[in-house]
Length: 424
Ligand SMILES: Nc1nc2c(ncn2[C@@H]2O[C@H](COP(=O)(O)OP(=O)(O)OP(=O)(O)O)[C@@H](O)[C@H]2O)c(=O)[nH]1
Ligand SMILES: [Mg+2]
Image (cartoon, rainbow, N blue to C red; front, side, top):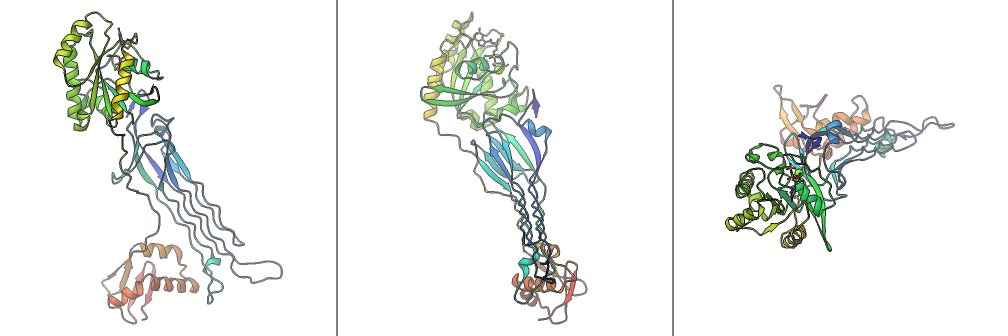
């Protein structure tokens, strides 16, 4: 979604490089008319990686660039020269980016630390040149292997900010002012609602400790159902360990501070149980304003669940104590654990699975990925290539399976475009 040019959800296309083709070539130079084969292998295609980058704070750039393609491997060359491998592609994303496969919705990985480098799509393997297919009986193969082709995949990127503390509260209560006082962050501060339109992160230092605090857009009634900017941003506090609940205790906007506090907690509860169960500390802000004192007394009388601090984020009064408490509390709360990586990688490795079916004429038809691989690599009118295919059929167990399925001498076998008589 886009708000004030902050994008935290995007989908992009990725493709690793195709493998370069192996080539057919023969040694030819002065004095050697019919040299042996010297066709080189194709280079491997580049892979696609995602990399965690702590300097990135949003997914904005992915709104403009949707397609990310790694370099293809180069064709092999004569004189047994290996084609150049394609360069790998590294896509930098902010910390907290969850990557999923768009087609199936399957989770791929959760980029959670700076420099994390996660292989997501392997490059295609380069094909072998004809020189590789020489055997004691096949001196001069007239065929080579094509490089593996890779597929384009659509992946979803979703940024879920990772912070230790989440600042929550109604709009205009002083969350950004507080963040600017306790950290080096310089969020926009103004006297109107929804000044903050996207999460701001600040690093808070307390003696030797430091932690990250996230200021998110103000929540209002119905936020959990998407009213205001609520729903989209509530997920940014999903991954915090502690909440700092800021309440405007001056009541200067005509609301009752106790109702504010209850309303925000209700929104958290409606959004997720986990958020509702997070520990909170309560910061009663704008204590410098007229009317605050009376409200503080009332608030303290009615709300007993969490520790309460009275501050003026504007003057800085009481702010130090809040930082101290946040730092102490965090010591007892386990660190955020990223979603477990399942190790999913888009794999272009060719599968050699196959099945045998009978067609209406009784012919044995071989189907499956093995057939795709054969049709890519076999040259129909080349006897060596056909001999190579026969060897592959034996090695991959196709001949054995045909026998088991009842194939007898003279029965027709169909593999892709190739049709031949079975000879046991
Ligand atoms: N008097 C007084 N004013 C304050 C205090 N803290 C913040 N303000 C003022 O309140 C207004 C809103 O402050 P922000 O920090 O922008 O509030 P916010 O909660 O981040 O607001 P949104 O981003 O709109 O949700 C600004 O005009 C601040 O100067 C305080 O302790 N005392
Ligand atoms: Mg703000």
